[in-house]
Image (cartoon, rainbow, N blue to C red; front, side, top):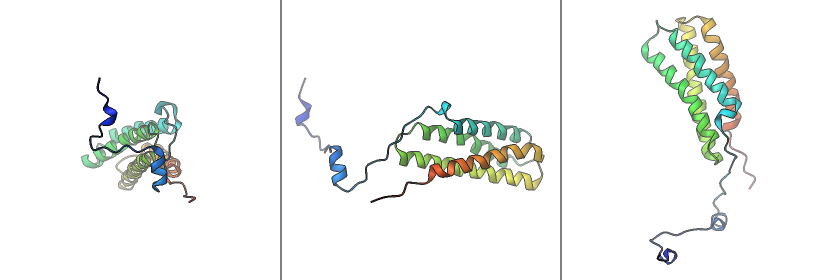
Length: 149
């Protein structure tokens, strides 16, 4: 077998020491976790289930509103699960930011349905309360740490 170490193919391989000496910050690593063992993921799934019940009860509402609510609620647990599986904290925070944005859209759509009175408040309120609680829980996960240097 040929010794490939003497061929560079135009690629420069840097050791981890060169990144630090070049002034680039070291990537912030976290511990990836299985998503099915983390409570925030379970609550996101519960929200998707509750919103599905709301969507099923909104026959009088326009299709695109129901479709948007259904899609946004389905993507929240997906983004949280992807974030939990990501070790690099910058990428994890970006996924949590996207989950928070979709969750904000869900809460806004639930508010719209409430103000239009096309769905009974008893059907909307549990999903809305859970969406707001999840927003409060996701907010600290999206804030980058303070730089000390």
